[in-house]
Length: 363
Image (cartoon, rainbow, N blue to C red; front, side):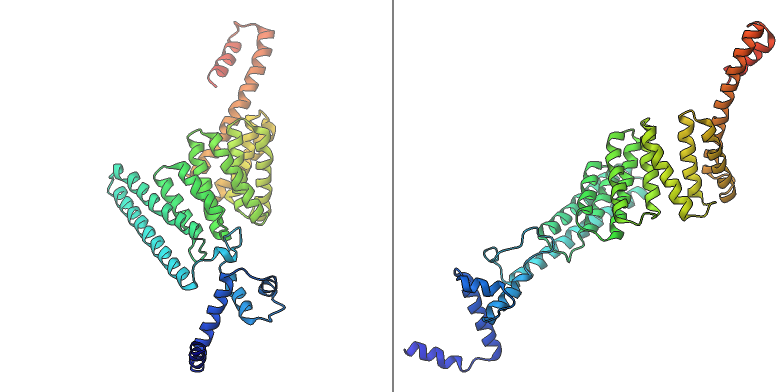
């Protein structure tokens, strides 16, 4: 009785803050033992706060469920106090910042080495930058803390991997970035890196590696962006060119047509991007031997480029070259047809027959 009385008398001197702390301690005690059915019902039923302290605990527990967590944490999962978790978060944040700064430092050294033409140092330094940034990104992902800009870290790591020519690692970082629920602006930047990586594979002739990247980029853009967004025809053209390079003309054709339709709808008719789409579709027809369809498209592309670009622009030269090849192929067909008629009527020894044969030979 004396001990109880002492506690009772001491309780009379508690401040309001002490009382709240005591209530919280009581709540934690309740959570430490098995809950009765009534307590469980009250704990998770916000409409019946007959035990206010338990209801308050329920509200406190809500913050333990991370927005990145697939499975809500249960009462038995929580072993850290809010103060402990905050301290742990700060330690994680400090570690991520430290790793990010090390990555940035290595990247700066790589940039300096490139400017000083120390080529042998560039890739190893970017490799170190990638390693640090990847650690920062993975640590951030494991912590499930949405205060850390996770997509940005994955994008940065992908950039460093590309510079270090670690292409599979870059692909992994880009895909992790895209799966980390980035805002639309960051999504577009990550897709830009995906296009860049696909272009590297394309230039190396590794079409089987480039194709899934371009197909994924197009699918995400068509899902996330407006149907006439300027990035969509870019994606359509990139994938169409890849199909064309592999001889898959039937798969390339609808992509080029769709890209042209979007650009003609959203851009000025004299815009250089319209000329690009015309040139792509015309070149495809040319490869298929459909010269009557190719010629007006290639001629229109050339006219737009000559009007909208300066005379020595590379795109103007490309159009001239494509149209020249088309005329050459058409000329070859005409000379072949003429030669057959001349040989049938005059034989092979007539000077005119020999001249026609000579023209055909030099095409």
